[in-house]
Length: 142
Figure 1 (cartoon, helix red, strand yellow):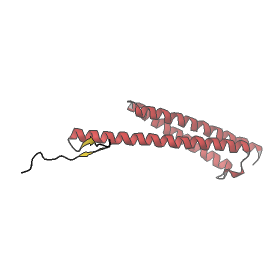
Figure 2 (cartoon, rainbow, N blue to C red; figure 1 turned 45 degrees about the vertical axis):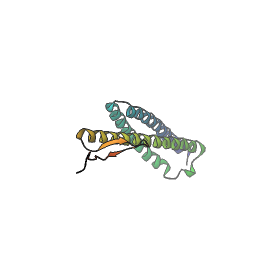
Figure 3 (cartoon, helix red, strand yellow; figure 1 turned 90 degrees about the vertical axis):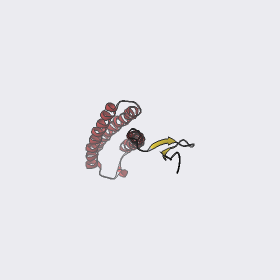
Figure 4 (tube, one colour; figure 1 turned 120 degrees about the vertical axis):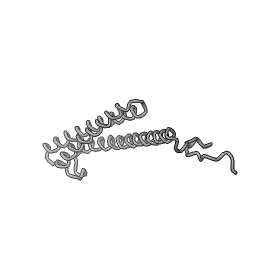
């Protein structure tokens, strides 16, 4: 790879790193919103996440056109940027999984609350601290 192509690739990787940093910040803000009480804020962060994914996809296409799928032939500056990007994206993946877990827990809680309001299944805590449906028992049998 010539030096001009190397510089272009380094520039694309730098922009990808910046988008990954913005994504990490957005995921952190999303987590704070998920544990708070602002559904509007959660929606805003989700929309920002989608926009950042779009930016990242564009940069990835540009990087592939310059570099191809194989990072092994890179020089040290490119390899260092690539490593930094991979570390950032691994953290973003973990953060996104945590946020997904929080969303799932909230979804289950809302579902249980709706069941209670509708008079459906009643959920109580067991001795182990887990929730589960409570079986309605007849008070007396004939």
